[in-house]
Length: 163
Image (cartoon, rainbow, N blue to C red; front, side, top):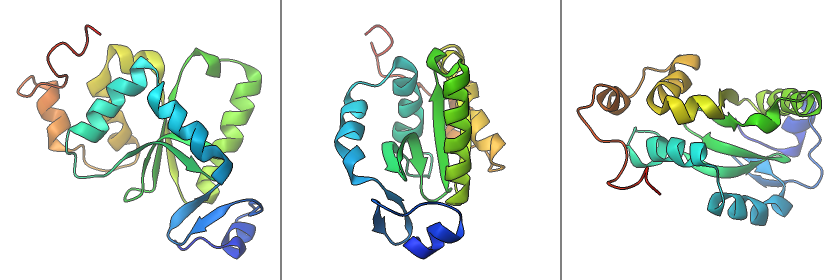
């Protein structure tokens, strides 16, 4: 998809104040510094998922804390048109649920698929959570994730979980 102000208007989205980069989703440049800060102060579950998505050589390139439209996505894969959100306990109230629903609708209007995973699930079952991402979007689970699940490869660097 080629993103222009006209394609956003056609999708029902407001293009005002956004930076456009052609084939990549437009973003609010005012969020770039905040996204950088969030990359440096992520939650433990985001760190776990990042280990899987970034460092496992899945065959897909993921970005962390990526500004998209007027939001910051926890993880984004351009190749799969995919946003992955890790939802902590702060997502368990009515106002946040409304915001999340609108955010998902806006992301879908941009042609993106959104997968939401509970923070606690990532902490307890990181491999299953990663498998869920690919199953939910109908893409075969990368073999490297399956090798983690059967124990034939290490997921965490030595000492990582103890920090």
